[in-house]
Length: 263
Image 1 (cartoon, rainbow, N blue to C red):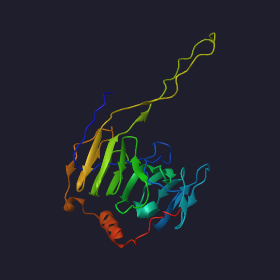
Image 2: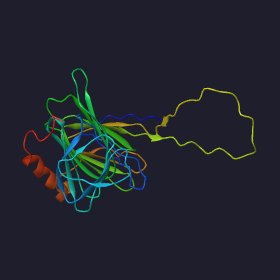
Image 3: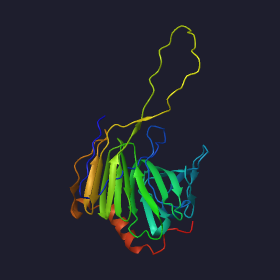
Image 4: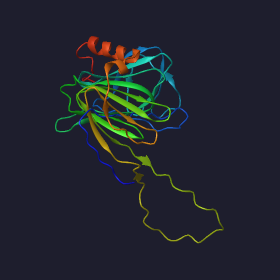
């Protein structure tokens, strides 16, 4: 598909995609930089599926999540993860995400943290992230968002559509990619097999490529088909809801140093 590259003054969207419990959706992604994300707060219930296992376990406060771990929050639950450099990411109830990467920054090398999410709501505050050379990225099947020093939230609905709103700073959001699916070969009588040949490796097919830059008090929506709407400003009145109020209060009250740069 013809690439579309758009840059708009404003805040950028993030799209989190998590693998669905039934395997129906691909995970969404978030990036920062550290060896693990600590469960700083858990209100209600949540389950985790450790990498390499097939058993869901109860998640508890203080647990360190590593790359490859999956998490599902229960009804009425809330989860806060402490990240390096005093950054935090929170997830609302009925959210499903996967930790994709937690690589700490080193001298001369930037770190990278990524989460993948198929469903739910997330709030990220990396505006106070200091002393950590890391990228913070959120991605889904329909969008990829990279940020540094900002506050924003993202909703991922059942149909994979996404809403991102920013409160501080700016984010760069671009169109996602979907993996090409090989067509089944017709069944027929036995045939002679040719000798060894060079076979091209797997590749991704871009559905639509686009990029937006969105700043404070702006939003962007991405439809279920991956099509972005034009970014626009939003008001505090239309944004007002209990999830937003709770996060704003947490941002004010969380102590400095909550992010675990020592992990």
